[in-house]
Structure formats: structure tokens, C-alpha cells
Image (tube, rainbow, N blue to C red; front, side, top):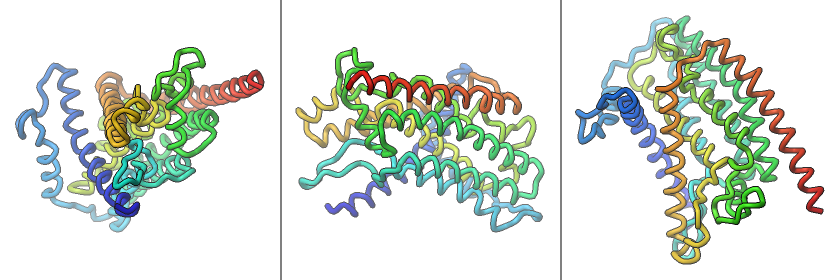
Length: 357
């Protein structure tokens, strides 16, 4: 099998995986809410309600596709399309697993192994807000416009804290390449004291403050509760997608869940060792490269799905922030804390290098 063939297959698999995870995240969200509220949740469509996402998808397809008379028709379509497109292509630089050996040739389970992967992801996340802003403005509706303005200002505010928290990880790894950042978390004693366990030298143990900042910023970037101000039902009807229906609304909703999936995948890569798991070297040496590769993909997705569960857990636990509280948290708490963490990281790295010489 050639490299190009493998990459095409990988792109198709990732596309199907992202859409499947997005679809079943809606089912999981309802089930998590039901468990926390002592209810049953979806249980009519198929066993345990597992066919509910298909029923919802069919409903979106067959609903009337309505465009308001005063809307900017071209941009009205571009908005949701852009959100969905950007959310899907962000997964291209994420290393989803170790390697697979096919026909004597090793392939990285990563669509594009670029040496500026972190920069690419931050850039794509920044572009994602344009889809919301365009959709809100093109709707020619005051509630949609207010929701879009909220979304853009919220994302700009929290991108700064997110970027500063990532810089601390980049300083430790010495690279913007996500594959290098993952490999750097494979070997080494934790804090230089705890005996080495291959695959467990995670950045989370060194950068807990950066993790907290990044996690909170990821909630805000994906418009998840308690930061779901752009689609605040009690104030803005339905936020930036008030005027949307049918599959255009479906694209916005799918885009949100795909973003949640990619955000948690990025958290796993940066802080929880990516595809690493305890004993990854032993598995590679005794069971072979392919077994280690398949288990690494399972380990990566398990960590990611746990992160998605935590996002859902938070939604049904914490009340929504007021808008001024949202801004104060971003500008007065997270950014100063991220700057402090950055300076502390730099000082510790310099001190460590000095004493190791």
C-alpha cells in the first residue's frame, strides 16, 4: 500500500469518525442529562435509544429549509458551511495513534505531520468564529446579531488565555509539532523522582495550571455551558442560529459537537500523553507494532471520550455565567494566571538547564 492510498483511507475514516462521534454525542448528552436528573433519557428509537441520532438526522433533512426574506442569502448558507468545514479539517494534524505496519512499511496514524501543527490548530480555531459571525449577521435578525457579537468577543477573549497556556507546553517540548509533543511524553521519570513507566510522563503532571486554563478556554471556545452565552435561550431566543432551520441548523449543531471532539483530542495530545498508555514500549516489543498501534488509537479515543463526558457533566452541573462575569474571568483571571504560569515555566527551565550543566 502506498502512502497516498493510506492517507486517503485515513481521511475517510476520520471524516466518518468525526461525524459519528458528533451524532452520538447528542445521544450521550441526553443520556448523561437523564442520569443526572434521575430520568431514563432516549429509549424509543432502537435498543437504549441508540437510533435516536439517525431519527434526528432524518428530521433535519426533511424539515422545510426556510430563508428569511431580509437575509443575505449567499452568506446565510456560507455561515453554517464554514463552521462545519473548519471543525472537520482541524483534525488533520492530530496524531491519532502510534504507527501501523502494512506490507513492511510503517505509517503514522496522522493525516498531515506538519512541524507547525499547534499553530495550524490555533489558526483554524480562530477562523471558526467567522462562520458564526457571518451567519448571525446574514440572518438580518437582532437576536442573531447579538449572539454572533457575543460569540466573536468571547472567542477572542479566551483565545489569548488558550494560546498562552499552549506556549508553556511548547517551551517544554521545544517544538510546535504535535507528534514531537506526544513522543516527548513517552519516556522519563515523572518530576525526575518517580520511576519511569513508559507512556506515562504526561505534561499534566508538570503543567496543571496550563491544563486548567486550557480546559476552561476550550469550554468557552466551543460555546459549551457555562459559557453558552451566544445561544442563551432566556435572552436571545436561540442566539446566532435563531433564523436557521433544516440542515443549515444541523450543520451548526454538528459543528459544535465536532469542535467539542477535536478540542478534547487536543487536550489529550497536549496534556495526557496523546496515544501513549502505560507499558506502550512493552506492548510494542512483545506484541508487535500493529498491536501497539491499534491499542494506542483505542487509548487515545478513550481519553477523548472521557473528556467529552466531563464537558457534558459540567453542562448539567454549573449555571450559566452573566456576560460581565464571562469577560472578567477571561481578562482579569485567566490571562494574568497564564502569564504567571509562562514566566514560572521559563524560570524553572532556565534553572534546570543551569544546574544540569
